[in-house]
Length: 199
Image (tube, rainbow, N blue to C red; front, side, top):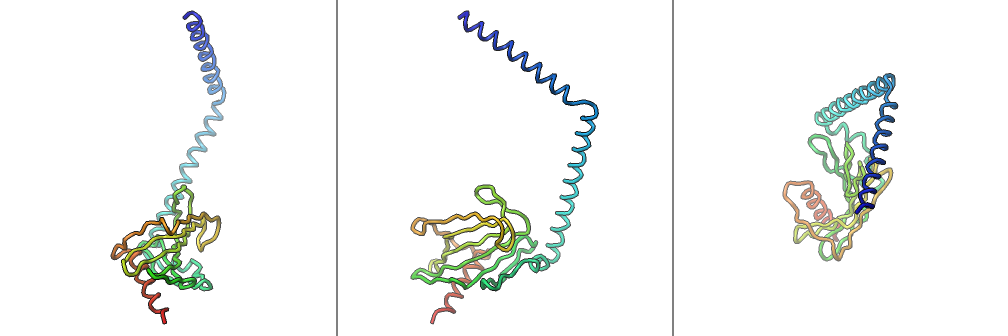
């Protein structure tokens, strides 16, 4: 018991000395000039953040007023067969599809889709991306879909660093197609494009 108390007293003295050293080092680190510099840096950072926010609001307003003006800055990538499909009413994203590498099966059709974003999005790993492509399988008879492969790109026009997520086709769950959504538009396009390609 005495050894334990002695150890506790000794530890508390060490803690007190360490605490006073920390306080004195903090006090020494903050001279009046350093304090002024720190406050000036903080004010500048706040001003810069305000300017960035104001610019973001202007960009959003411009995209909302004319969504196609932003779409026209994107690479249509026609060599990959990409065709523009739709744009969000606020110009936050644009969607593309391609019949290149379209594959038919007994259940339906598998196609590639592409979506571009005006502002960074976050994937499951919290990595930022501006462009994403998906290989999606559609069951045209049962009106459902499932992504088989998703590739996230750090830059628009499927450029920059890429992160890939691949699903096992035997285990990937099917999702229902919700009417009136981008998913529904893609489903209608894919199944109709598949019909048009059939002999």
